[in-house]
Amino acid sequence: MHAFDVLGDPVRRRILELLANGELTAGAIGATIQAEFSISQPAVSQHLKVLRDNGFASVRPDGQRRLYAVDGRGMQDIDNWLAGFRQFWRPHLDALATEVARGKRNRKGE
Image (cartoon, rainbow, N blue to C red; front, side):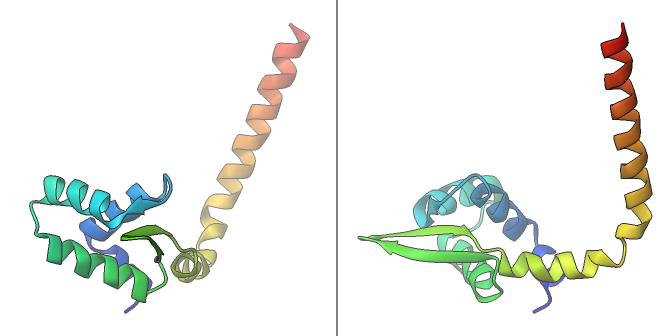
């Protein structure tokens, strides 16, 4: 499955948003996703499996619990794809950095 196909699903994107704040148990992820999307626990498990299988999430056992975390391997595919488009926003970011630096210099001179 292509990285954008994985992230094309709002449930999987939301799971990654939750994991971006740190490790979570499968139960905590399930409770949040079930409440927000009204889907079953088995459906949440399937989304977690897709994320794991495609390098977006990792899981480790902790006693009876399973702790999930973001795995950067899946993000690398997206980063590689975006590389061809950075040329379009890099000049704007460079100009912004120049304006920020100019503003700092002006404030020091006041």
